[in-house]
Image 1 (cartoon, rainbow, N blue to C red):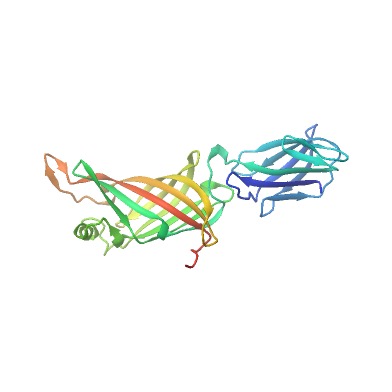
Image 2: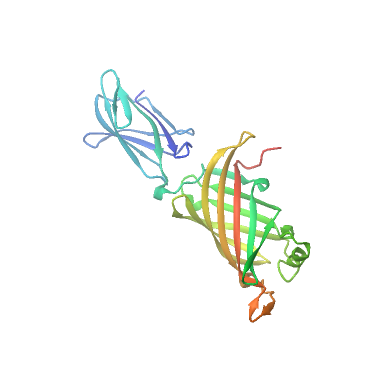
Length: 285
């Protein structure tokens, strides 16, 4: 076996599209191999004794380089690579996202409504806030494998599921003064692109449809990490926020209570706490 390696993200996920290139001291390429679906590289090409440079690259990740010394027999270690007997055992190579930002493994993810929250905060009387949430929604995420900017998010919220903890207020919010749920029963969001905003932070660009009006809305997204769940699945956690101007969606109803002070502020703060399960469906309870 000439070359073996395991390519992983910082979270330990396989990078299936990684490429390992080995060059000799003159800079000439002597071996090139691609990682399989498990992020493993295995190439049987025998390497002549000598010093080599091992370079690992993958679209969307910062490249990593290590040196290796191949000998006729025995094993030697050099800059993270073990080698001997015409082979180079690079071991596990960890790749960081270009720009330092991370995302979950590529592929489909399904948002779990039971462990997620879609909330909205409005200023009340200029001195405090009223919080509400939507209790019925569905959403999916598709992490693109090579170009993260092509990742997609889609969500559908049942407008009538608004809950602020006050029945009279909720009935008013469902009326034509606000959400007009009879004419527009669904609130939808469809992403149009994703861009890096910092380490583990992203901006999701998309179109929000509310009351039948479509406006561009950006989500400030933080990726909180991944982990196993008790049902044998893998979950990823996100937190996202956005500010909406009510007049952009014809949510213009208000009352002036005194001295020009409105009962409801002009801006809505959207707060999302999301758990997504890897795959195209949720596990059966």
